[in-house]
Image (cartoon, rainbow, N blue to C red; front, side, top):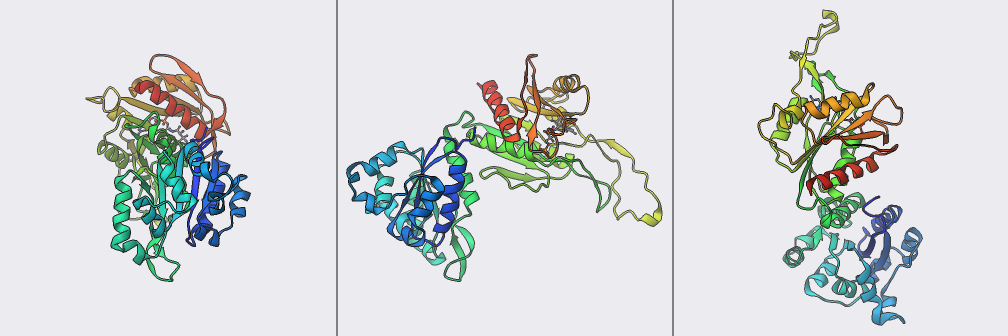
Length: 401
Ligand code: PMT
């Protein structure tokens, strides 16, 4: 189940042109199962109407009229009490100043003062306003109180100028919301490394040996670990995917790059979801191989086995408290996976039947059997890669306990 499902989120919308992007944020949160109560400031209402938010959330959108309505005496308390998170996106310099100084002169700032939940702001203003010492002081004050801040980004501003002041894109705000909500998750305080994608082994400056891995399973694992509160490093080969917000991204190409990147990191958990090459060209041609020279004979050699190096019997010390591998098999699934579990020194392995059309490389779903070092097994039904990732993270949290 998504970390957003059933979460109560207050979305404050203040007076910036970026307010139109808040409708997208409200819509995406609602689609992910969150209960979204929008509070618009008077200036926010000038940019987008409450009806827009009501239409995308299916819930009443609140304005300052409600501050003085028949529920006025309890409105701010009741909204703030039920919320898991208060997000203000966009957050103007004016609202930042009010938050920093405890000023409560509209429904949003009154609610912010009364709320007990974490606060995330996405500042949006002109570059000069953001750079102003007053705003910078307010920002520092808010950060010192544990307020989460995302952005602002650099780029084109409403004034026509370029500078730092743009609200970050809705996807970034949504990612930060997940990170903030995950803070007391089962992996809080733990470091997790996830590898993703297919490695690329160079033949010459233009050609590589690679495979069909899209990185989807690895990226889903990184997101699930973030949702559980972990500090995540995602070591990834080039993919078409957007990296999860909050993860440290390390870009690699070959097995050797991936191994080197891994040896540079320390963590509690390693999840090797990448499809790493078993073989690579023994010699990489310095120049592009030419057709006129005939069909090349490419001699292969064994690529380093990353898991064996960092976790298996060849490894001198146990680098990770929990090490998880994947086995992509087209035949004898459980026998082969079980052999890899032992030879690679893993705590568990996810055996992937890649002969099925709806599992394995590049599709949205997976069919996985988990084989554990203690001999137990769990066969998961067909599920999305996100659901499979959440299951794997649950098992990691159990083993860490
Ligand atoms: O990326 P997607 O399109 O979402 O597809 C997902 C996936 C099919 C790539 C993924 O779920 C998966 O099965 N990954 C492992 C694929 C693989 O390389 O399996 P393997 O049986 O060859 O290797 C076994 C384990 O050893 C894997 O954890 C692998 O990362 C690791 N390995 C492999 C080779 C190598 N040189 N070093 C390694 O550590």
